[in-house]
Amino acid sequence: GFEGVTANDNEDRVIVAFQRAWGSENNPRIGIYNTVDGTWKFAYYPLDARESQLGGWVGLSDISNAGGGNYLVLERDNQGGLDSVIKRIYHINLGNDIEDGATLEKTLVLDLADLIKTTGAPLYEKLEGLAYTPEGNVWLSVDNDGVSEVPGETQLWNLGQIYTAPSTESVEETSGAMNLKTIMAAVAVAGTMMLL
Image 1 (cartoon, rainbow, N blue to C red):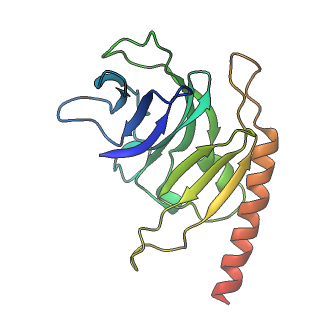
Image 2 (image 1 turned 120 degrees about the vertical axis):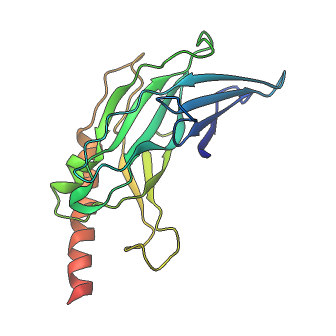
């Protein structure tokens, strides 16, 4: 299904991210809906290969417009804790010249799993919400599905200004990485205190 929905700068295209591939296809689609003429165009998003010792699957959780035809995509596996490996934010470009059926190129912006593991905080399975603000901040949310079998609580993190569009400047991760490290360290401490 549609896991992520955003719009282009002119708000005449709706961009949707499908969580997983359709049928026998190898990669999920990014759908581009033209609100003027009512037509669809699809491009394929190249997923990372599974890396978890438990296997599982890798899919898309969200997409957010970062301006100028650039979009941030949240890619993750369906594992949590020590079994989780892939929790990553990538950049893609969806300019008007994207051909229907094309396979997109992606660039890593931030490896969330590696970063969170350095804090000692738990690595949640469902990092599922992503938003890029006009100020350049990237926000991330955790979805606990609202059911008792899923540990933790819904959380909202400001990762800071971890991304700059490649057409202007190179990607900078430092400020956002430090911000997230501080947040996750606090989460780890709070979790320990709750267990006492």
